[in-house]
Length: 87
Image 1: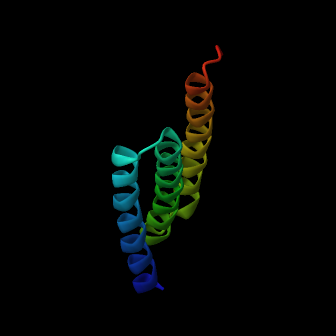
Image 2 (image 1 turned 30 degrees about the vertical axis):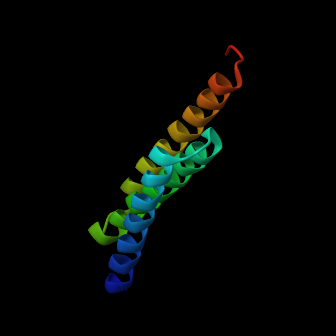
């Protein structure tokens, strides 16, 4: 199980690296927003995986939930800003 989690961590880090390229080189704002969403989701998964590797998943799941709430709120604010509407 430990080996599987380490392999999964490596795959998630590779995905984050590829999405960083999409975030910085994306031809449209929609590509950049998609890259940011994938990076946020993968970071949440990395936090939870680290919790299982550390042996304290409860503490890290709480941190991942807080990060998910902030990421969702940030995406909504960014979408409203890019849409040209005031909050």
